[in-house]
Length: 113
Length: 123
Image 1 (cartoon, rainbow over the protein chains, first blue to last red):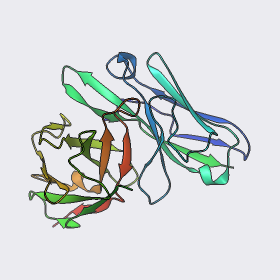
Image 2: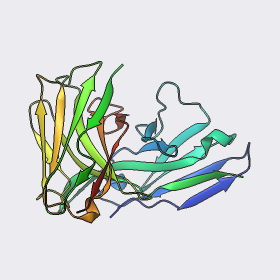
Image 3: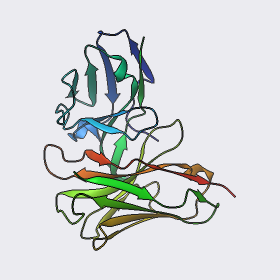
């Protein structure tokens, strides 16, 4: 029951730029809650890629960048590399009449052609 | 460097209670800067937050699972645990424990994850 919507897949050739959108609503991203992004390589746990909308943890290449506007956020990967082939998830916080909880996006599979 | 490790049965019968423990190493679970969470992922599907606990024992749960979930903490063992009752096949998933910072600007992000443990619900 993901409340954050992402495209199922995106693809690009090595060296290209790809972007992944994350669409929410007024009870989560639009309410001002931060968006975080995770990379999940096959068979492994998710890894924090971007926090606080646009900040990279130590060790994450600057090819990865994040932004947020209104009820949406985006992750951009520039200079796409084969090792970037993975699933990517956005995450935020949602507060509504039914309760409050952390929410994840539906996930996007990035394929390097 | 803080590490998390899940442990518990990999097979649970329908209607029984799933029990998992997360052991924190390389740091204290009593640090006031973090919540400690459980997240799950069915095979081939997305991530679902289950709940979180603070060192004080204060908890918050996903409204969709609240009636079946209990998360507890044992600071003496540097562990926190998950109990999910009345399980069905729909609860079959990889279960992760993770740390959530409460310090800006990384507040609300799951910055450290365990490797995950597969739990199958089947008779």
